[in-house]
Each structure stands twice: as structure tokens, then as C-alpha cells.
Image (cartoon, rainbow over all chains, first blue to last red; front, top):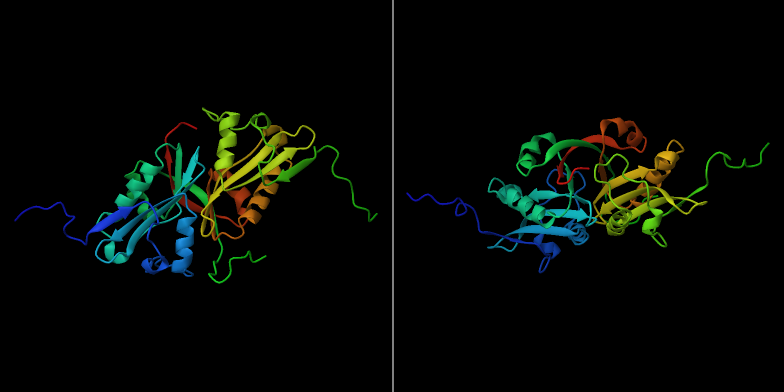
Length: 150
Length: 143
């Protein structure tokens, strides 16, 4: 039996750092567990509003199966608001590849921060990140209403 | 007496602006207190220019910036407040609270607003409805 590198086990994945050719129809199944998940159209808007994105795409279907976003001032700080891989594609190193690729985009910046649950601390420690503390405020997002509620 | 009282004469008049119009590096001195490698004023201005939303507190007598808050956002879902600082001589007068209140108003169209802070600042941010959360940081230059 030949020992393969593992990439042959799963579907072929390609990575891209632009939104070329990406429409809402290719963005389904994300925001697992969110009580008020953004629609695919809103998802595309937040991708477009980010400074850097990396997408993981199933080469066979063209569907986006993972993504990571970053926002930055270009001088001091970057923040990674979202990193997600569709459940059916987890456990294949896609999240790690997305994180490596976005950090390459940010490698000139002194500070890169993100918020996460404690169970994924070991994942982010692999990239040299250290646990820290912060504050968060979350407000419901209605896709039908972009205007501030007050 | 039902007349509006004049503002406290001991407090220098501060105005708040949400743009960088007419702000020059010379207006940005004294920040990054306690940082080992503080940003130069021109770098500070570039950082503000690269931010998506800023609020500045300006001493109307000197036109100097005495406090600022900066945020990044994707314009839809996520926002991150990178820095909030008030010059030591202007602390204790509510300038930080006013900056934060205005920034949260500027981000009222964004679902999730996050920031990193030391534990000592949790009560300050809790006043705005924020709750403690955990995160990760990558530091590639000593602060």
C-alpha cells in the first residue's frame, strides 16, 4: 500500500484570495449554529467589505466550502472576524490552510487579533498566537433591514 | 433656577469629530503612553487613515488631538476596536466614555463589535453593554 500525503482522501480543494466568480449561489451552509445567520447575499457583502479574504473551493462543484476574512488598518492592527469550514469538509486541514494563507497576507502587521471559544485555543496556538481577553457586544442582524435600529 | 448651567469652567472645551479633515501629524503628540516602541505621529496618522471609522477628541483651545478611538469593520457583520486612548492630562473627565459612546453609534449598523483589553478595563467596557470574551493575539513587535 502506498502512503499518500492525505490530500487524496478528500475532494480536491483549491484556494483563492479574491471574490472573482463568487456569487451568493456558491455560499451555502455557513454560519452553522448561529441563531440569526446572515443570508448568502449578506455573506457576500461582508466578504466584499473585508480587506482580505481567502476562500476554499471544492474544485468539483465550485462551491465555497471554507472562508476566512481579515480587516486591517494596514499599519498596526489586523482582526480576523470569521473563519469557517463547512462541516462535511472539516478534519482535512482546510481551516489550517485558510489560516496560514490569511496570515501571509498580514505578515507585515505587528498585531493580529481574533476572538474565539476556549476549545479552539490549541488550533490558533499552532500559528504562534497567545490566549488573551477582550470584550464583545452582539446585536441581532436582520437581513431585511440594513439601517440602524435607532 | 431652571437655566442651563454653563459647563464646568475647570474642564477644557473638547469637541468630537469623526473625520481626519485638517488633522496633521503635529496634532498627534503624546499618545502610546507606556509603549516600548510608540508610533511616531505620522505613523499614527497613517493608522487612523487606514481605519474604517475614527472618532477624535480635540482640545478646542489648542486644536490638538487629546483622545481617539479607531475601528476596523467589514461594514456588515464584524467590527474591531483597535485602539482607544486619552492623553494623561485629559483623563478622568469622561473623554474616553464620550469617544466610546460615539464610536458605538458609528458602528450601530454592525452586528458584532469586539476589542481586546486588560482585565482592569472590563468594568469600563461593561458600561456599554459589552461582555468579557476570550480571544487570541499575535504580537510581532513589542508594544
